[in-house]
Image (tube, rainbow, N blue to C red; front, side):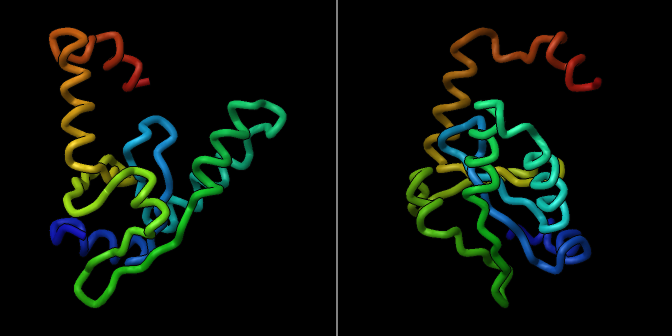
Length: 134
């Protein structure tokens, strides 16, 4: 865990966190502080399981969720099954994304950025920014 986040996370969850798959990016994991995960889990499980998209989201997020703790040096072991699924071997990138972190295979993240940039000018359209503000 990067040192710049440690104190805040200790205050929030005492180092108890949850890994799960990103439902949007096949090469990414999400890492939540436990209290935030509990909120997300409740919201996701509150969706209708009759809807196939909701069931898949429930499986991907909740079904794969794995609770983890820091070791004495502030390190978190990514469970092998999750690590293998997103091809994280030696080098990973951890990005703070508000209430969670994204964990990526370094090469996969670079590829995702390259793909995004090749689709246009690399600027997020103002219409998408407005949607984020809602």
